[in-house]
Image (cartoon, rainbow, N blue to C red; front, side):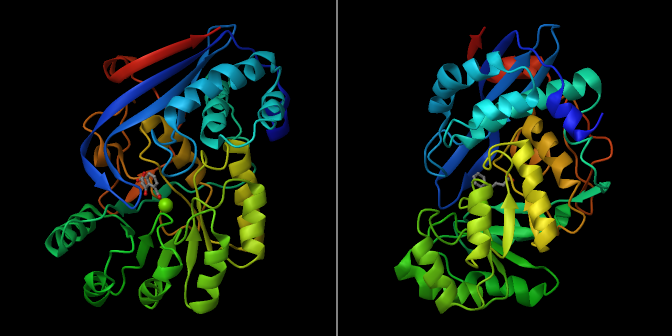
Length: 376
Ligand code: OSB
Ligand code: MG
């Protein structure tokens, strides 16, 4: 089956289950967005007329502080606007055409597309990814995203622990209260470690001087400015020529990918398949990055094993990525929702050759379930 065949084959739907889970985290995580202690997410379970099933994970946050999309509203949107589209869809392509009419709501639309793709993979052994005509790599390199730390000692400990665990890249959350001097020792002691920062859009015009001090460190800075403030981003690029900017929140669609690249704001792409609206768009973005030789890697939103598995499979199509924000299950959770938790080797790789459809542990899902809506 070719890629096109997958998009065109006949599909059906009997019911769509929206399952809200609240998965406890091992510890809290602080960024410019806020503090997080558990992972609240919506799982989408698609059951077709033969009783075959597939899962997708909606990885938007419970609040509108990363993007405008938030969990409660994702449920409403799915119930009122996605369900009718899914019910009427006769093919994968049909579903995408229907979803296209819904403006925004990328994470929510993506969850439904991923559920269908997962169903096809389980049912036929073929999905959009296995039909994607490019080579994959076996060992996917993994990086860690480290939250804002209370003080220098905590930061030192976080760095040492992450290095000891084998992570291939360390990404530090920063905000305008962060001090570049707190990070300089890392570069001095470990010159081979490439420094990355993530500001989650927290730097405004009055913070450009501080951003400049960070940029001087020869590092990558993810999403320096709010996604709605291209004006500040353009100024920042003008005033800080050495700024190497990786975009996350700003790239929500093919259109914003083209635009940010064209105007010179995009030096590297953090591709979150949910944020850009789904799997097919993600693959189009990989194609774009390949053509432009634009560095690209897969980002994370603290996904459970369901979302991580799908994201890892996409990451295996990026042979040149330094590392992805795809840390193993035990990094955030005491217990994951899948049968075989994602493991990372001592030198920071996840074996992607064995990845297929995630085996969902329904008992664990039940344990952490807080709400279930059945649409039929
Ligand atoms: O900005 O990359 C981000 C998590 C939630 C929301 C935004 C971001 C993140 C992360 C976590 O950095 C990365 C991960 O899932 O390991
Ligand atoms: Mg980010």
